[in-house]
Each structure stands twice: as structure tokens, then as C-alpha cells.
Length: 327
Image 1 (cartoon, one colour):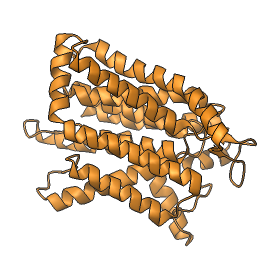
Image 2 (cartoon, one colour; image 1 turned 180 degrees about the vertical axis):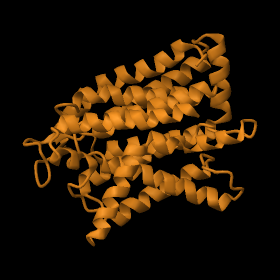
Image 3 (cartoon, one colour; image 1 turned 90 degrees about the vertical axis):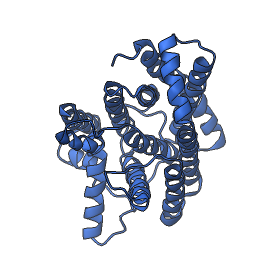
Image 4 (cartoon, helix red, strand yellow; image 1 turned 60 degrees about the horizontal axis):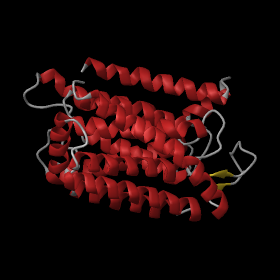
């Protein structure tokens, strides 16, 4: 990563500090207005917990993005950083606007679900509309297939899959946020090494924001992500998997396997999604109805504490994601 390290540091640290500072404010706001997760079936907490994580993470991301754009426009960074980031912002302005609005839309959809418990079909339809709009702005998967219809279909399916995989993995303190930090850091590494400075900076923003939230969520949770937060995390990770160019025609043929990097970086939540859907389908239960068959729950039944189960899954995510360094 030869790009000015201070820009990467500012992106990561700025998002961390902003989210860390915003979380208590949003927690009090949620408690005041009743946006809390009450104790109940399949829940381990005994007191209402504020569903402020999504609001805090989005606030941290948004304020640092706006400050970063202002810094580039006002030439407050060193010339090399201004030139490269300015070029990226100009070239990808439409895509970045769609991503921002998509993140806002996914967070709002999850927030509405937190408040009113949307029906699964309505929630899936809302996710699909947002994913289609983002694909329409040019944020699309191609997989070497020269078909616009294929590209739209795969992109929408990918965003829906990753969004719901992270939503499913918001089942123990720190699990969803920690997996998000690991995946975002992996995307930052790949993008930075490929000279994609803007994408690397965005990925570090996400990693920093989620890390700033984690102290309030792990090991003891005073704040939950809620559906607003898990939808937001899943969406931004899905987009970060699409933005980098993991392969180009100038690279050797074996490097085409690098397009599988996002699957490895998101292997734990994706495998968990496949596993629970398979189990529920096999038992003739709706796949969207929650149960205790996630990897985290099975680790607890095998003898791990909840904290140990989460750490084991973090380590697994790091280990599988590290395989992409070979590409």
C-alpha cells in the first residue's frame, strides 16, 4: 500500500472516533423514544437494550465521508492524495451517490423492521429494490459474462445474500460487527495493493466505524446493531466486494481465481446462512424464521461460552480470509 498512509489512517481513525462518540448519544435517543430490544424468546438479555448501532455506524461513516470530500475539494490533504482521490470521486460520483443512498435505504428498511416487524416478503422486496437501484448506477458484478441481464441478476442476488447473511449473524454480542471489521479490512488490503485508493479508503472507513461500535456491543452489550445496523453492515460489505477489480485481463490466467476473494472474506456468514437455510428447509420450516442452529449457537452447545463462540468465529473468518493473500 504505497498510497499516503496518513489518508488511510485518517479514514480508519476518523470513522472509529466518530462512531465511538456517536453511539452513547444515539443510545440515549433510542432509550428515550422506545427503540429498544425487549427481553423475550431466544434472547439472553434481561433488560431492554437500545437498537442504536445502525444509527451510530451510519453517522460515523457519513460524517467522515463528508469531511473527506471537503478535504479533497479544499486541497487540505497532500497533493498526491488530492489528485488520486479527486480522480476517483469524479469518476465514480454516480456510483458513490447510489451507494450512500443505498446504505441509507437499507438502514431505514432495517429501522422500520425494528419498529414494526415487517413481513419477510416485504423486507425482501425492499432489499431487492435497493439492490436493483445500486446495480443501475453501475455497481455491478460481471464474472466475465458479457450480459447486462446476467450482471443485474447476479448483483441483486449477491447484495441480497450478503445483507441477509450478516443479518442472520447478528445473533450474539459482537459477532456481526466483528465479522464486518474482518471482511472490510480484507477488502481494504486487496484494494490498496491493487492501487484502488478510494475503495481502500472506503473499506477502512467501514472497518473503523464498526470497530468504534464494538466496545458497546462486546463482550457485554449496552447497544445492539438491530436490523438497521445488520442491514447496513451487510449492504456495505456486499458493495465493497463488488467495487474492487480483483482481476484484469493483463494479469496471468490463474489470477482469475482472485474473483473468489469476496466469498472467502465473507465465508463465515455465507456458510452460516447456507447451513441454517438447509436445516430449516430439511425440517420443513420457513427459512426466515429464526432458531438456534447458527454456528454460534452450535459452538455454545458444544461447550463454548458465548464469548468464546464469537472469538472462534472471528478467528475462522481471519483464517479463511487470509487464504486470499495467495492471490
